[in-house]
Length: 323
Image (tube, rainbow, N blue to C red):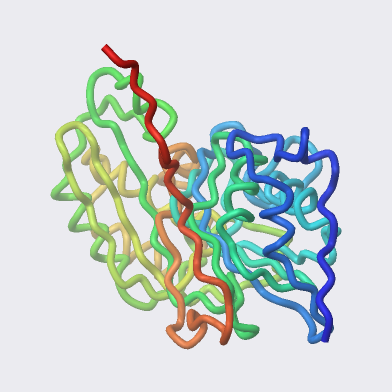
């Protein structure tokens, strides 16, 4: 079967070079593309972003979201439409929430022989507060959301009399002295399989989600003034993590005892939680750290290009002045 190399959008290039800091040549990028009639090729992205100025992950035209920015860049590079790309993320983070290990997948009707140039072009088109850390081929069975076996979230609290200005976008400031030991004791009571209905906010997007979730660990780590609450679970209901953190903060203030956790869980009623903490913890302290997957779904397809982790710039020839 003959392979045709599709042209990339002229708007991406100036004098034969990509309009980005990477200066990827059109020849190099096009030469890595092979069109096939065999069907769709699936690709996996690992993405980091500072969610401060974005209205969450989920696509919307305005204000900007992480998904809309990624799709815009992918559309420019591949010349495919949104429906063709079918970009799907592992977790739909809220406005202001960050990620270090968000995962997404998309499809193309053509294969790539190399991913380094594609990866560099993608990061060159994205704003500086969104970066693709990894780009790889994926087997047809892989699904960024439904193949996930667990997710890890981290919530950061800066616990001091005044806020560290360098932490203001990534940690919630609490001027009350928190008892980390009591928070740790209470966090352990979330571990196990429970009905988390009492810790979920209502959402109209997914109908009625399964409220039974398994928490495998909930660590409270103190590093000076910074408290890190890291939780891993099979899945999380809408705003579940921020609601659990909000209750733990009240327990840390010693306003509540740790035995309030199983009591609220048992009620399966969000209105009961509202009696003790009315609002979820602020979104800017939360970060999606990683998404873990079934091993067989992480296998690479046969004859696929090498996974791209980005590439370092190198100096091929150093010209020094002669003295």
